[in-house]
Image (cartoon, rainbow, N blue to C red; front, side, top):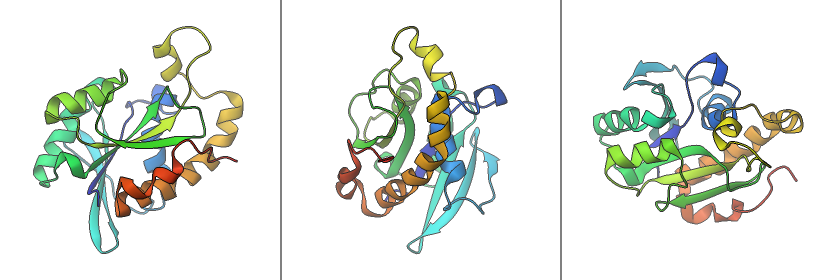
Length: 189
């Protein structure tokens, strides 16, 4: 069972609806944390919830993406949470919109939030919930991730966030072995 869910994003209203903030969006839309009190500490906002009689935490680092580890590490240390008990929810360029993939450890795919967490924790052995945002057809990747979802995607986003809740909760309860059924499946079909 994972004890800490980290939703990656950037603080500030100009980033609130960008693809890079889909991790925050999922935590904000999750019924698990809907009634939770978000507290400011560890250079982030964190909340707690109870799932299957166990306390779990959610964290939204407020450090900007490329310094996310500066929020994750002190919180994990304070609550004595091992890296292998952390699930990081983030945007993923190499996965189409509407899909989610889970994995433990491995490559960072150039994601600055993951790079920061890996560097500060000293390991890549934390779980990832990779939410697909697709690649830009052309142009700069940073403008793509820091831009809003397209018009059609914006219309589908509330439904997608709703559909992503169960895979996230299943991963927390069952571990990654049970959530492989979601990999490469379009959740909007």
